[in-house]
Image (cartoon, rainbow, N blue to C red; front, top):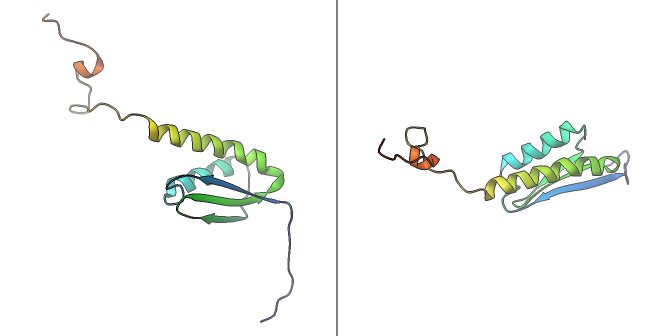
Length: 105
């Protein structure tokens, strides 16, 4: 088996999001890809595992790519750590749940 040419590019960078189940869910990948697309950063290669999503990008856009991905990661971690909302009855908060108390009026 022959080859025609070998192309090397030293001006690339790897950006990764690492965390439990990051690579195992499409939500993380979709969020990362959308954040990069919104910044106009092209992805040259994608690699995933159970704990990370990595992309190869143009080195010149590294910092531009890192900021929205960091923001995405922090928002998702905060959302997962937020306490669950109180149970609702019939889709609406009851007075006791919303802090209003009946005083016999």
